[in-house]
Image 1 (cartoon, one colour):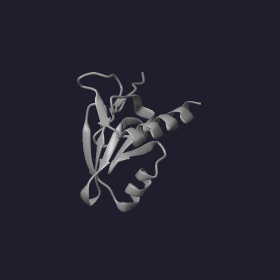
Image 2 (cartoon, rainbow, N blue to C red; image 1 turned 90 degrees about the vertical axis):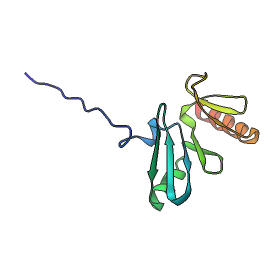
Image 3 (tube, one colour; image 1 turned 45 degrees about the vertical axis):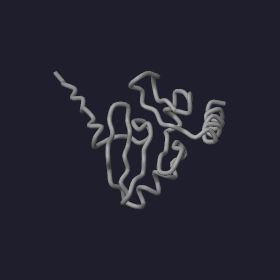
Image 4 (tube, rainbow, N blue to C red; image 1 turned 30 degrees about the vertical axis):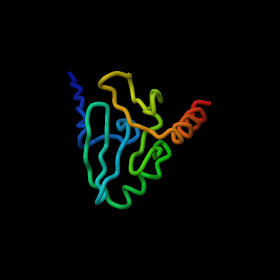
Amino acid sequence: MSSILLEARNVYEDFEVETDILFFKVGDHDLVIFHGRNYNIKKRMTAEQLKRLLSNPNYYQVYGGCYVNLNKISSITDDCIYFGEMGAFAKNVRVPRRKQESIRHLLKKRHA
């Protein structure tokens, strides 16, 4: 009889930037705050890791050190980008109007 063990993935230590992260903010001293669906993770990154992260085409800079995952955007409404369901507890990021149009254009190109 064989048993199958499924490993539970610890999102706090072993998260996938492409699929788990909605947006991230780069702070001082190479500290990056990753925002997932129901968690925030602070992580120090090397200059090389940060360079690789910032060059990822799935992320778009909306202001200063804040980058959103284009694949996770569900809507852009009232100067905010929403991830998942809209509502009182929805994760969102405020976005300047000029950036909204750029993001809409990028999203249309991805879905074309």
